[in-house]
Length: 155
Image (cartoon, rainbow, N blue to C red; front, side, top):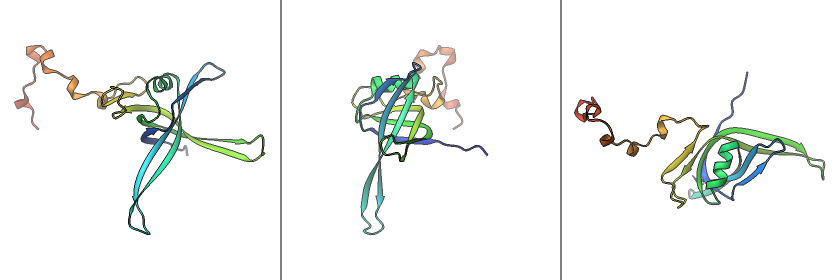
């Protein structure tokens, strides 16, 4: 059976994104997303906070876009696959591993003060219906014969 790996993260960048070029000329952007979580302690019953720092890599145009517009503290929503890299440490000879999210899709979220609005998204160039903002649809821009009569809508 073939496996399945998907991660969806919402958090803030814990450092400025770093853009690098591979030996083949591909662009890769590395960044870390800090994901905050609140939970109730079983021992004390008090609310506790924890933070997970998740390494992410975005390749190509998405990576270039993240590098251009995001900085430390910027809120972001990313989705992608989980990858694990395993290697032998050259100095100690021990096995090392790193788990990261390889970004397939991302949204810039509001709250970073850079004037980008409520959100911007990238999904490999495909526009999804959820990406259309209702405020962008203006009835005055339609010809009179295409006007929508709200009384005719059954719900």
